Image 1: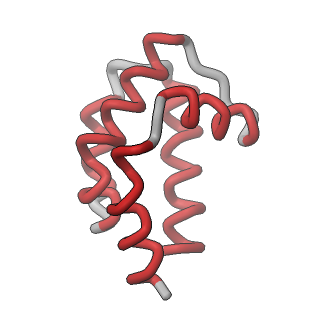
Image 2 (image 1 turned 90 degrees about the vertical axis):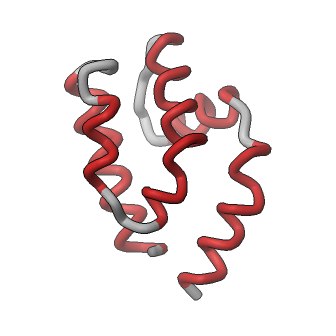
Length: 86
């Protein structure tokens, strides 16, 4: 089942728009500035394979570019979803 999730992500990751990310964040009660939204969007687009490979160290790349609270929320969300789907 894990393989199926990974393949679906690989297939559709480049179709995701910043507005999709913003909508998902709202559902998770996570707020962004527009600059942070773009940083996170670009990060996901560029590092999705690292994230699928469970390379949590790539989060360090955005640590200084977003608020500490947002960084913590994203890291926790990644860990939660990783446990569910990867």
